[in-house]
Picture 1 (cartoon, rainbow, N blue to C red):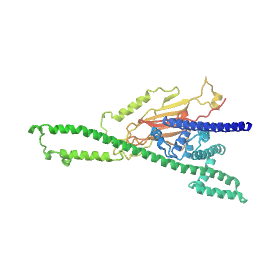
Picture 2 (picture 1 turned 180 degrees about the vertical axis):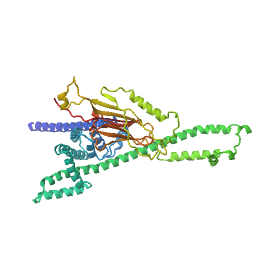
Picture 3 (picture 1 turned 90 degrees about the vertical axis):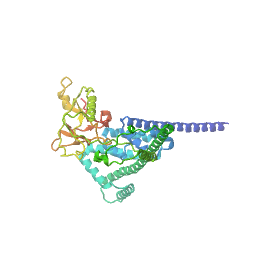
Picture 4 (picture 1 turned 45 degrees about the vertical axis):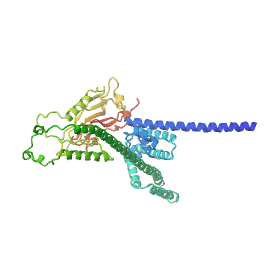
Length: 487
């Protein structure tokens, strides 16, 4: 009996352990799903972190199943970063890189899929390499660290995973051969080989992601075309049911005696303009047959393209021209921005800088070039560095310095609305204090530029960075990186 009781207790402990393991696994799956949902929400609300783009990219490693189709349709407007995942580090600050390192560690503890674990493991390798590069930049200086990275990139770039593995074996053999070699160099190269192998794996996985994403978009487009075809056929059937009784009623009615006054006066073809004389003359039956033929072509089509915006050529400028729709739209956008209250540390910044524009734009023969309207702000404040802490206080503050800008450029009448306006920084030789920030949008708008302080930008959304183009307004808001000192 004692042995039986001990055996029963052992079985109960095993069952409880198995049940506990199942609960822990379910809890991990739940937490992972919650992380992915939060990532999707942050991307939709345009407040995403770096980890969110990586998580949503990884979502498309495997094609969605039929059970996931409804959930996928909810994400129809979700934009996915189509660059290689390791390139996300190019736009991150050291603090953001540290934050991404912690987020990757969290996903590694939650994932169960071998493919996903392999993805996050390779991302961790690249992330740790980037953190080491940041420390090297601080220790050696940007120029020296960049020169070392350039030499390694020239040696390893363009190689496949197999070629990198072969080179890794050669380096191992050289280090273990006992020959007099530069050990520090070859060991450093060996560490970089691990990073480049991780990038090669991420690149091959990214190709699968892009392929699956494109296939999903094609399937969604086919479904939309089929739905549009069904709607057209339904409307055509309903219209035919309404027309048939009316036609039958007209046929059954007694024909009214014809009178010459019922018809318009004949037109003298010789008096018509030349362009109207070249138009084909069709009878009512021929026109109706052509209309039916066109409707059948649309109904039989498996793809219905969205109607494009009509391109309207700009009229010639005349004196006292009435305000156009574009001018009214620009005025409305300008007033909406001007009605917003300025912050305590903000001032208007509407001083445009003259730039050397091309003699002609390629589209000047079709559209009249014009400057866009804008409403900009500059943010100023006190910078409490060591010098200011020594010579000033809160009662006698130092001079204010520029801490950031808010640019709002209005493009309500862009011809090609599928391409968002762009901006770039132009540095001038011999001028280290300021740079030109130039905005370009395409026809019918000219380029426009403003002179700003030459300092490093803060690209964190938490610090107020914003770069978006919505409803004809390009918004570029940024703060400069600040150095804080303790008293």
